[in-house]
Image (cartoon, rainbow, N blue to C red; front, top):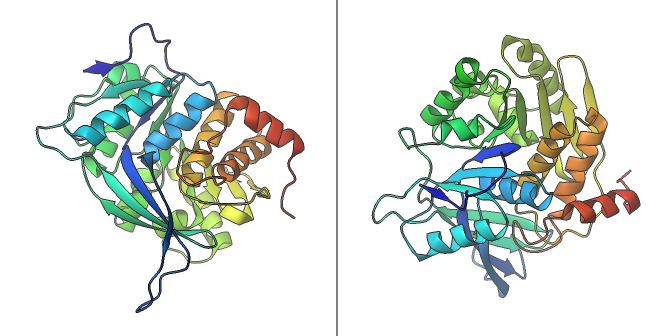
Length: 319
């Protein structure tokens, strides 16, 4: 079934993956064994890695199709309402009867640092009915599903039905697979987006420069022509088969880093849509990630296009 798709423009980007309900508990200290902590603030809102990417794109004015599922419960209905309010074209895979919505409790401690406690719920799975014609009608498709069989199915399709579509793969769920399979599957995406720890896990290496060199060596073996890797306070690295572009981070007063990686991913997608040069893609994506940390919650501080334009005009990069 479709939700809110009537009279929608053809999407520029399709995003597939999870949405979840997030509960944030802000603590006055780091957790230590045998020592308690006080909750100084509590906040609830929609989250989920793919949903955060889709919402970030929508706030930038990008027509975005979001394919997801939620639980057969009140939280699922609230999540769907939030997503539609953001202006997304949402295709909801109907949940099975009695299915629970994916939920997370996120502990935010000084630094700021966070600990995520997940209560797994409804997720996209192999065999779900998907609007493949609409998904691959978009020039860019972001795949953020955790079901390895479904991901394999999705990356195998474009060569047969939409060879001009570019697949953008997030590293989050790929890093959870056995290394040999995760690397093989990763290289079937045209573009990879993730963080340094995820990339090192997929390649099985500990040192960043060695990891980047190995990535360059393996890219010609598959479809991948660009990897955009976030390094948090250290900025980002964009890797092609021929060059490595390092882009510094921006100075912001961070409150909560939840969703910053998703905002970074959305910035990369936006840069690809506008055919920005690599350094500009990195700068835009870094700014998206930085701005996302200004408030508690994965989406609370996601910028509009006007906000990020003003930020980029005035902001200073970290030295």
